[in-house]
Image (cartoon, rainbow, N blue to C red; front, side, top):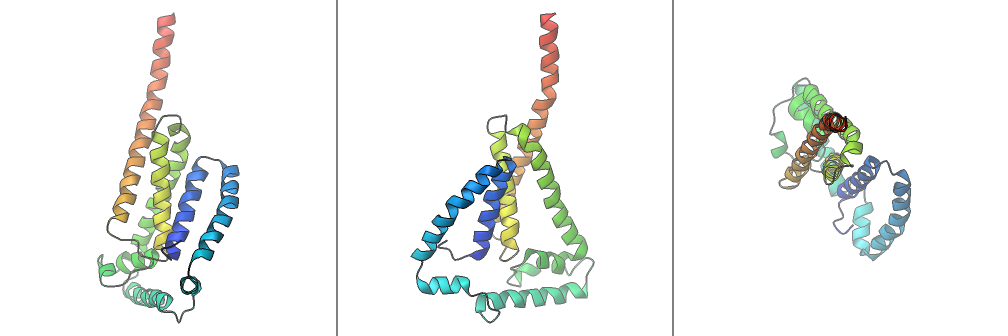
Length: 205
């Protein structure tokens, strides 16, 4: 709350909901929302008035919002000059890139954006399917949950703010790598179970 980063607020909320959704505990989601509402309200009232005014100022004339519109306009121009493959990776270093979708379109065109989104969709599907089995093993379910939560949190944050930032994005994709490793280990353990069962049956016989 104190960062006054609206993108961080959104990313945090989505990340927490993703963790709870993976657990298929939708009652807990409702309970968390009921608990968080008064907590957020209290934190909000503790903020100085000028900070609250800044956070609520979403007019196009405000400096913060206008800068985002300017980036979208510049990114659109780059995209229109090369809509299929974009104008090349690195454009985000020359602009205040505050929208990951338009950044992808400007740098890599429609093909690049499609690939970027498909990576996220494929990862989410894999994690959603893998979590129930991974949760039975100590630690594996936690790695998958953390990787999924951070992946979604970073994506949502990148819709309204910087996505490619030093440090944070490394932690995010490092966590995704650990989640994929946990998924692979879960599949390996599941493949070993039938063999263990057959061995036990053979010994019993």
